[in-house]
Structure formats: structure tokens, C-alpha cells
Length: 357
Image (cartoon, rainbow, N blue to C red):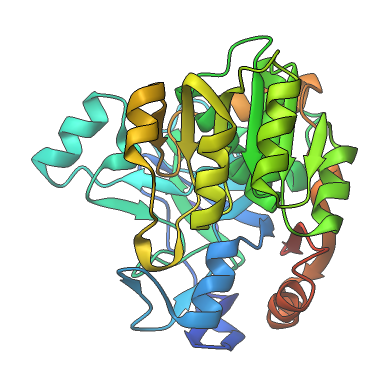
């Protein structure tokens, strides 16, 4: 007979704009046959978490009832469902937060194509109305929990989620060994894309931002050259490294119309520019004639798919080191203060993490 499990747990719950409370909530029950119960250890604070805290919504996703935040997470398996073959209590795992519900024919269609991130009916931690991982325990499908080797910490495991955006961008571009890559935006996602581009074989990575502290971090983790938010300088840097051609791949991670155009302008004819950042107002003016004449391909991406095993391998092999990006650590009870810290230190805080366990 299984031991009794606790009925309640602590969680950081968003009740409204700037109203984040650490309180007692119902704990998940026994895991379903295909699930594992995970005791959460580490959760990173993502820009989307902060956006919900500041605005109560992201586009059409609106927080209409109290919601547990957090989706960049890792933890330790404490119980496994009856149909789980390859995980056991004590295993440390990184948790992929997006799981297709497969409740519609469209979801089945995208799942079969390997594009499950595009399923119209997908569960995703801390995306209304789905609760997130700033809490003691979650039950999660075992197929979306990835065992960490002994040389990868739980803190590093939580960073696989933001790293996945960079892995996916490098894959779909694709970045080929020896390429020159430009990245606009040196926030957490831009820096993760820098690490992933280097791991994918980029010979040169030029990254731009308007904040010098972010560019300092970019140089520390492997940027070939940094540019202080000047489109002409970014274009010149890319051309200097490529005998006048321009970058082979552009990655736009700033979400600002000027950055989008700067990224396109720095790319060579025939290049691919991957769009990650979402501009305010959902629109940006782009010179379509320039895209046509130079055959520059725009490739938007939404989240990622099939990236977590690659992330685990990159960390375990030492090809990627995410530890320098962790700026500050907080306890679960300090989560409201952590959000205030992130907002007050946007220039210098790359990634704040909450140590739950």
C-alpha cells in the first residue's frame, strides 16, 4: 500500500497585477499511470512570468483566476505511475512544460508531424488557465520528464527550458558549422541563443543590445563581437567577418521593430532570419522588396519541440555552460521579492532562480 501523501503544499500564486502571494494550495493527488510525481527543486523566472505579473496578460492569454506561475523547472521524482517504465523515485529530472492534450484532430495532426508545439490544445505550465511550477509538487507525463546525469545539477536542469529556444532556433535555421550568426537582443533568450549557436558550430556570433551590462555577459560567454544597438554597426560587423557578404543566420530575440530590421539588414543574401521576439502591438514594418531581391527567409518559431534531450546532452558534455547566466537565487517564500528584484535590475539580472526544494 502506498504511503499517504500530503493534501496541501506551498505555491506562488498570481492573483492580479503585482499581486503574487505564497500560500497554501491543494497538492496534486496520485500520479496517473503515465505520470510521475515530482518534488520541485528549482524554477527560473522567465520574462513571460514577469509580464503576467506586470500586466496580467500576454496577448490573448489573460489571467482571469489565481494561477501558479513558473515553467522553467527541475526536480526529483518521488512517485511513478503504474505504466512508467524508465523513471524511478530518486531520479532527478528536467521538466518540459508543454504537453499536447491530443483532444482534437488538429492536435493529433501536429503531433504526428513532430510539431507538437503547434498543437492548438496544449498544456503549458503557467499559461492561463494552466498552473505552473512555483510549488512543492507537480504531476507530469513521464515522457516530458528527462533524467539528468550525475554531472548536471538540478539548477542547470531548470535552465534547459530557456536553452531550448536557442537549440530550436539553431536547428530550424539551420546553423551550419563555420557560419557567422548575428543575434539582436542580449537578454536571457538572446544569450541562450548565443550559447546554442556556438554549440551548433557557429564560427562567429555577433550580438547587439542597448544595455552594456548584457553585452559584457555576451562577451564572457563567447560572443565574437558585441554592438551597442546600432543597426549600421551590426551590419558592418557581420560583413567584416564574412568578406562583405553578411551573416549566414540572423536570430531576432529583442522583439522590437528596429531590432528586426537590423537583424535582416545584417544578414547576407539567401540567409535565414529566425524570429523569436514578439514586437509590442504585434506588428513591425519590414521592407518586403529587400527580402525578395535578396531572398532573405524569415522563419518565425514558437517555443520549441524535441529539444530537451539535446539540452541534457549539451550540459552533460560541457559543450554549453549555463551557470554564468544565473544572477541571483531566492527561496519559494521570497518569490514576490524575486519578481521585484528582476524588474528593478533588468539591465544586470540575466536569470533569477527560485530554490523550492
